[in-house]
Image 1 (cartoon, rainbow, N blue to C red):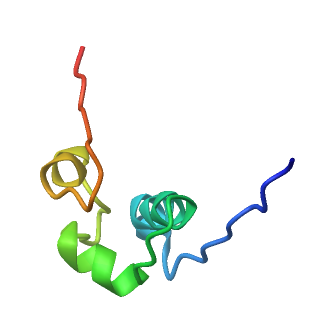
Image 2: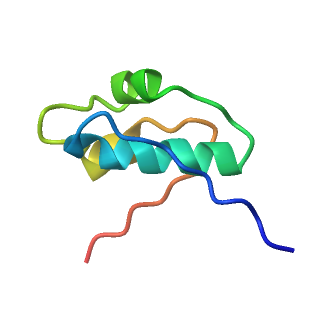
Length: 67
């Protein structure tokens, strides 16, 4: 059975990480606004850092691997 594709519009080009997080959250049944996620993950004019995503988890167990 095919799943529907979730679409999330970015307000600018630096919110791609936040938009991806919103799509992942929606897939798992959590609904958050872009504004809320950008505040939690400290989105700046250069985007969201991987460290910020790993440090501020919303109901998900996140593992960061650096090599």
